[in-house]
Length: 76
Image (cartoon, rainbow, N blue to C red):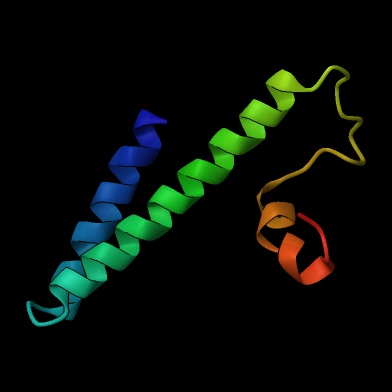
């Protein structure tokens, strides 16, 4: 996860510099929120895998897109 933090930090810095000082605060906050949300989804998937009494089979293993679109599919 440390590598993802470094990539997220580099992404937020580059995005803020590209959009200029006026939007820097909003851009950085939005990018950091996106990276934090992505980390939480990954952590949740790891927690599900660790706490689940039986392993998932390959067809039903949840991934980030499943979590992202669970609301629109009527899940979660």
